[in-house]
Length: 453
Image (tube, rainbow, N blue to C red; front, top):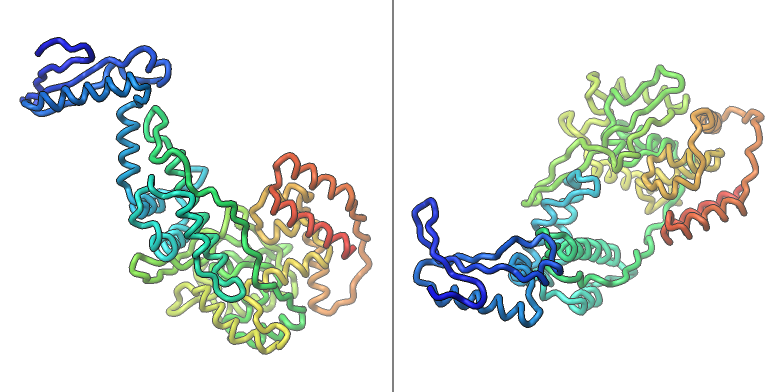
């Protein structure tokens, strides 16, 4: 074959005894300066007899170089992949392979929620669209035409779906596919500035006598759940996930170990399976001090309703299995109306009740974080460290309030340096340690504590 001005075409024989035409060229020095890690030469094989196609390939590569629009062939292949890969196919794979920042897989419950949002809220608009064809205006139109019901119903779901959409498109625009940094799309079109909708439900805080009434009205095997949530601040899944081994009543002080949470997981056909998984976060694994006045109630419950094995559940479900959080909520919703003031109270409000009561008893912000198993280290950094001795005193004061024992004289709480704490908050906000929402939440809690004192 005649010598070419650019590149060459040679005949090669492969170990499998096949013969190919290979078109090859060496990239100019200028391209090596622009693109690092380029191979010494680029080559493309064609079947024997495809001389015209081999010539055309070399001509096209030379033309791109002369025009200054050449990019590595791998990048062009990835770009073509972005033009042919549909949003649904990419999103479905993204969900199944998604990992946390530390490299561990996301929880199955999180994956299930992503699948639901994809199928119900994103696929109807974007499923068959190639990734490269989705524009900012497409996303804006989807957002503006999303059906929002009376009183803002649907806003939270729209926000969750957009957060998922943005995460998927951001990955497509930033995840490198080769050594040259090639990505499926140049830039993410998900650039809306979305604010979280205001919380529609206002938590209701129950008084101690109301908690007693509610616990007495619940089905007997679930009566203790009201105290664990409304006094100790457990989440509903954490209540359902307690095992006999988690309760230590003979220690000083008595301790409840929060180590698990029951969670529903749904397969692709919508069938539910209950699993005994980890709590909401690593910080949610915690040891909670039990007031002495709750010990007899716990002993009676364990003798009557819990299995005798260390791994047996404190609140067994059907046939001794796991108790579904939904079953606990259903029982609660049939019970709460016994107190007219608490109609509409969510079971999760019992957790807010517990933390509010502890704050009233003098617990510091850090102690509340430890009791509740909160996860935001940014917000926790503005509070002092939790003190085990102070937490014990807080529980003793709560114990006296529950049993009606007269309050003993205690050392008055140290005055709150409100100005200094607000200054610290502002400094953390300016440094970027706290974002706007966290700064507002921490400031509000601090001001509320200052008013109470």
